[in-house]
Length: 184
Image (cartoon, rainbow, N blue to C red; front, side, top):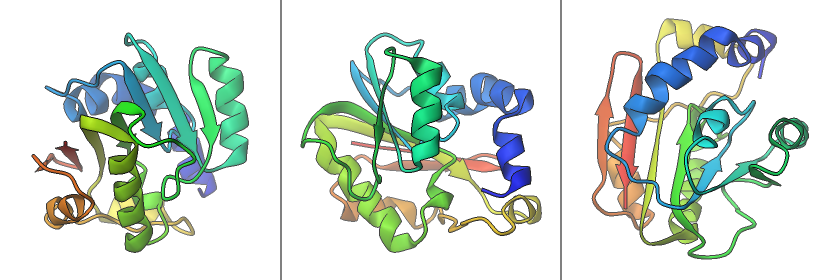
């Protein structure tokens, strides 16, 4: 991430937004169950909120520096693993839910995003849920991502992509600046 994006994602403003708006909206009506996988937690703002709920939380992060940071931040309360969401070093059917927030646009290609969706399906138990959110594109969003990886996801095409990965009961809805999804 560029300097500006890095600073924003560590800010008190973003922390409040995640806790008070993003996660309540993205997870409204979603039952996560007892074993949750968070894909791409970055600086752990969403992880901190998820870690307060009952059950076990595993965070899978591709950047080693973020893995080290998250391990120090959460100690033993969150299992933090180094790995790529498109090739997860996790067993089949291990989780009741998989989630990802504001990170899909950082996956370097639509093909890699599709592999991430297939991997999320693989590591979920039968009936498990995949849920999350990501940003809608805008001039401000593009500016924030100058010299960053930014492969936006078209919410209109996401249901077909999730179904191709094996998911059913797919829903996608949009808000003012973001979209949320859930699938089984």
